[in-house]
Amino acid sequence: MSVEPQPETCTWNLAPGTFTEMPLSNELIYDWNRVDGPELKLDRRPMLNDETLRDGLQSPSVLDPPIEKKIQILHLMESLGIDSLNLGLPGAGPRAKADVLRLAREIVSAKLRITANCAARTIESDIIPIADVVQATGLEIEAATFLGSSPIRQYAEDWTLDFLLRSTERAVKFARGLGLPAMYVTEDTTRARPEVIKKLYTTAIECGARAIVVCDTVGHVTPHGVQALLAFVREEVVAPSGENVRLDWHGHSDRGLAVANSLAAFAAGADSVHAAALGIGERVGNTPMDQV
Image (cartoon, rainbow, N blue to C red; front, side, top):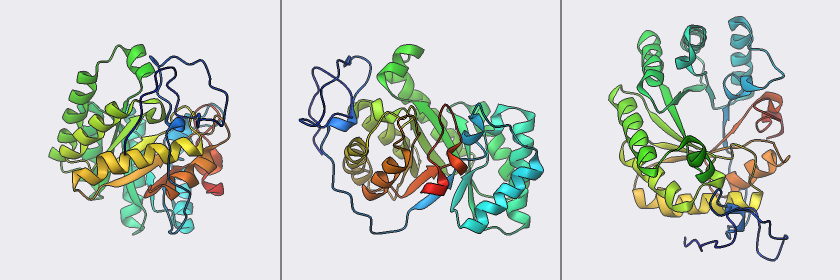
């Protein structure tokens, strides 16, 4: 898929001739909504990944519940047929790790079908606790290592592309070295430049990741941009890799488009969609699982 340069603006949301062009700087964001994408076609069941107990708990309007409640929520996910869940970020501290351990043990002891993943920054100290839980329980847990990717995030953090690539390589190889399946997550993908996205995902796959997650971290994108972005990732990253790579979509509700974007993502080739119960999460929330 060819991607045309955007000399005057970098926001993937504006389909040419559809909206008035916004005066946004091409130095800070890249707009996937201006790139042509495929037509919507829903012809299969999506896999669903539940973020209630991780990203959902970052909502300012909810409390981190006791482990007994989390176990109840886990069983509700199972009864609803949800395919997978994020158990949490065990590298966040002792309680977070203890809760992830209890949830993992419950999945094993109750013989639940739901599969598990855990969030981690691209640092070894976040990945090691996931391996500890796997060793203690025998449950296979996917390590979901995440890293910002947009120009504005690089500017704010003073990150170079070389730093992002080195962090990606180090984290994915470390997770694989510990025997963990690797999921690689780019934050703010919907405002990231295509050449950066391609390099990051390609590096992750070459290092052993077999799942990649495209994120609308600040709820920026529209369905048109979702289709354009996922078409690009499928054609420029997944297909050339020659590997069996799962493609996930993770959206937020800042513009009220999370459900529409998730449906567009699935129609555009996403294998799994991330969501949370009642749409809880940062700011106005994640994609509502109950509406997907």
